[in-house]
Length: 74
Image 1: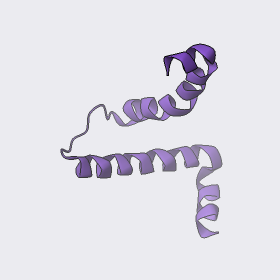
Image 2: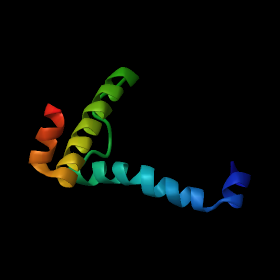
Image 3: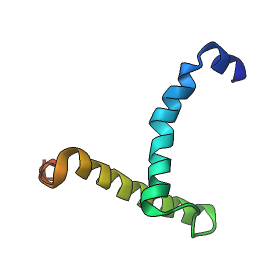
Image 4: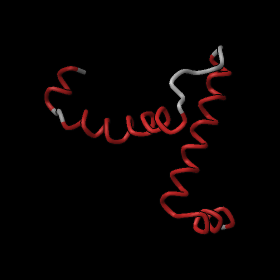
């Protein structure tokens, strides 16, 4: 992996842009630094709900309430 990153350092920049942003936003917007639940099944459920809220909030930002309602109806 280190060799691949050394050959293509832009891969890490792309990962930071695509992957790290949602997690930083979740921590900042929702104040969710740690999981409240224990056991992997519960943590998965908690993260699924957090992801759903993040995605809805992003959709509202990008297309607005009317656009989101129209997309749901279609």
